[in-house]
Length: 284
Image (cartoon, rainbow, N blue to C red; front, side, top):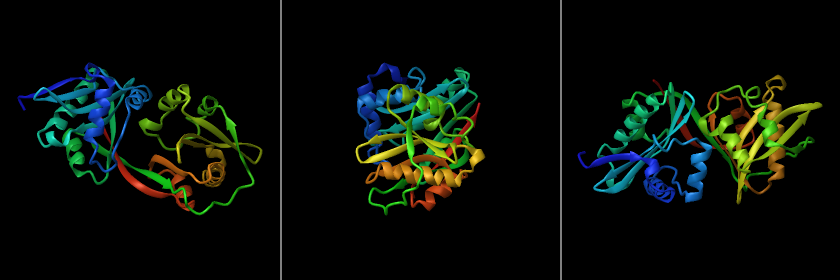
């Protein structure tokens, strides 16, 4: 690979990075299509370290990209992609190795990433780099034309997303992934991307959700439920009431840990698992 050069992601424009990511994922299990503005939002929301993220150049042309996020002593790898015509030449392996070294230099103690279960080549790549499987993650979706859910007596009330996030740590039984942790959500709230709803049940706040809506779909970015109230009943009421508010729209929630009790609610309300991922971790 004498023609391979790795340069910091900051050295290229946002538009170039978006283009490389889109071209790298064109035949992926879940194709991706990002605009430069969306790429900029990802940089901000996920704390992408553009100095330690890398672009691969081969024969003086951009051939791939790998992104590293850093928050204190935690790191996350995302957006690892190589253009189809440059694959099977070790570019991804070289980029991941550079990210790991950059994370170590930044004082990161643990790096996490997600890989789609069927992506055996990525599995091998990360395993060879020292990553180990930590847990299974599920992406759930309820179709827009699914049968209507019963409308509960309780209704949701609009609430400040910032105020709702004050309950984040107390109202999550399972550790959340990078894309759905409090830091990510706070940045999305600052950008005006999220709406908040609260459920009162038996005279007190029992659950909340933060949602992001695009066109005909509603993405649940966070669901918090007071453990003292139990998970199943408040969770069911919350999602039934949310479905009523957004009738006729598909609903999704991603990266739910397989052991999270919320899965029982989602399955009962006829959400379907569309993607299975494995979260992997590397201790430095």
